[in-house]
Image 1: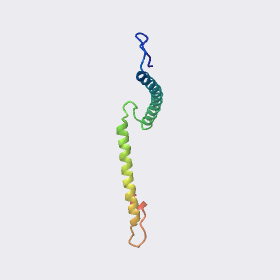
Image 2 (image 1 turned 90 degrees about the vertical axis):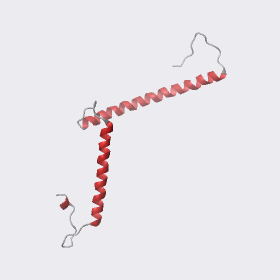
Image 3 (image 1 turned 135 degrees about the vertical axis):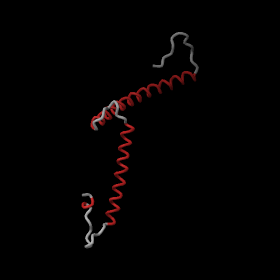
Image 4 (image 1 turned 90 degrees about the horizontal axis):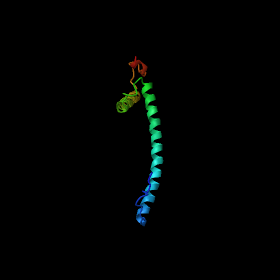
Length: 108
């Protein structure tokens, strides 16, 4: 906490006392904010450890940057495949007898 030293205490001028008042208020607010942030960090850490366990990884060596890079890569590839499949469905290829070809036949 911010406290005035007892020894050598001088009468404060207006600007110094205003500074101390402002900084004391700031300190109290920052202390509360820091506590809330630490609580959120603890929740995030426990959830990340649960995520590592879910994927069978060691939480101590589980690198979040690598993990989320892999997830991002998967999502990008999935979206690309989905767009290709939708484009293919728009074209709806016809068989030699004029019927639409089944999509399921392409994946078996």
